[in-house]
Length: 60
Length: 215
Image 1 (cartoon, each protein chain N blue to C red):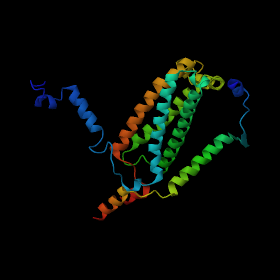
Image 2 (image 1 turned 180 degrees about the vertical axis):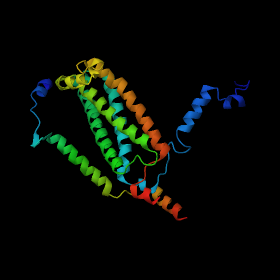
Image 3 (image 1 turned 90 degrees about the vertical axis):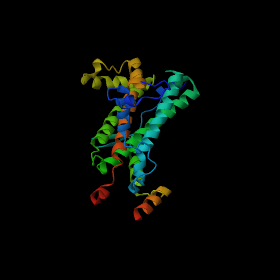
């Protein structure tokens, strides 16, 4: 029955915008990656002991 | 030559004609001393954008491990076993994460011009790795042994054949695609990953653009 269910799967949902045609699933993944990229740039990285030690060493 | 006590003679340890010595010297010179597995990094590395290279490597490790488990079970195992189905899903989703992390890693490195400071080979090996990874995942989709793989092979054959590669790379041959997927391409990927990491360790992590200008 599992193989039959694979056959019976419907087509994915697509977005059409001029010459651009993209599936909703792919669009969601691309948007999520862009959000993750932006977050990686703006979210502060937790400072560890190594960073503090580096700054102390620079001050010396 | 070894002495009667098993200790190497001085001549042997410095003999440039000895290929073992040359190989050892080459291996030791690949990465500067102490830089192979450093426990400290410059301050500018304390940013989430620098994490995505390691995340890509971690995902690749899961890809390879789950692929090895799938190889033990066999080609059709994941269609008839709930455990096989689970491992197959782990393999698929670790590949999804691998590509997601790798593309964000690529974006980060592109926008900080990571080829600066004699790091051109680091950038080039990364780009080549990206391309070969796409080919590896393509052969993976062709190895699913289901209607999806048949559809992809049917749709892909004309494009591949138009390049001339079809003479030795037949997407309609699932046996050939499976062997490319589990032997040849993973070997190439792992080899280039090693070269890429060695390049990173040789030249260090690229600094941000503003840090580079200040320096």
